[in-house]
Length: 252
Length: 281
Image (cartoon, rainbow over all chains, first blue to last red; front, side, top):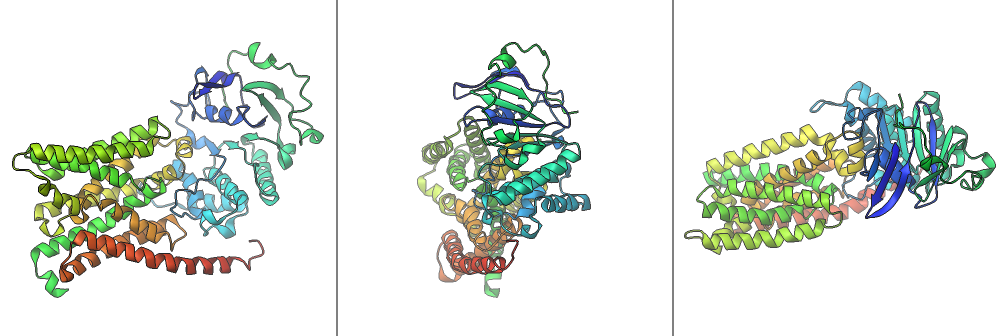
């Protein structure tokens, strides 16, 4: 992502962000509400149009990107509001869609990927239940399992810890731990890191649409206030004097 | 029932009712999931303009209705995509425009009057000809094949369009596909229950099924069974009681819905009970 600018409803949300993720990194995008951190990852994925700058996924702009199966996206909330019930297994299985052929039944590989994903988030015993009957944290785990089922290289998680019970936070931490061990790339947006803190290799802190810190994650004693302790960073160092001409998001 | 099957026109009506009863809830499940339960009504109204255009141009009203309904569906989908909140306003515009356009055009058509439109508004399943029946069967088959072929992608689209995009799905194509599929389904259902009740056949069986199911697959299959059952039951009942078949079908479907709501409360209580003893919740 190079000099990425995004405006929503005429209001500038990102003011020229430079951001590049290397393979195997676990990057936390931190910031207060309204700092633009969710918009940043949504722009990375091409879900919101840029008003300036550019974004590349594995070296290709999102509009021409074809290898979507390499990316697993976990949005903030499960939208079960539509009204038609769906089981946990059905939602997780839909994560295989990029790997399936039309009019072909699910293969053994599909079924085992779904089973592994359900196991990984500790929801195997709820697979047959309607997703709408689960708690918020469990629904969040369903979404993570859906991304896992697609077996991507890179995971993008938008606020996976927000409003989630402790059991789900720990399930998330252990799932991420396994992903990191497998060498996958993880980008996660968070308000606070909590139990994820030890896994994060790099933190990007956003403030009012600008990167104010990019480097080592906040130390454990700072996790409750992730934004404090970074006052020493020059607020505009990263975006105005950025010398790096190419900051594509290229994980491999 | 055997007396019923002795008449050719009733056999055709029965067959048309069954396939429409299967196809409409199949599409309807995705429409309800996308929170577009009223889309069918909007498209139905536009189809009325198409019917009138058919009389005006002396072509088949069914063909022109399909064209108008498909164009209306595409228009609504594009309006939804552009403006984030104007989905219901877009529908309202179609409602008024469709009815007004239909009444206006039928007045211009030679020998046409509002009475001509009545059979399309309220259905005339007993007047289905053999060539009508082939069109209904053909379109219903295409609709069911589309649902089977694109079901997975449509499921994800209807769950979360943004996630579908990140999975590399062609969100706009799929949105248009489901909208146009709904449009052609509505036109074939128009012969059975009429344009004013067409949406009921897409929505009521789905609303009924979801009272009793936990999975999407079970919902769609049960909704199809309820749709076909209500269509046959309503048609046969209407024959013996001598009432309008379209209305009988919809009233029967609504009655099944009320029973399902009561039954659903019991079923959900049983599921909740079955879950509680599990220490891992």
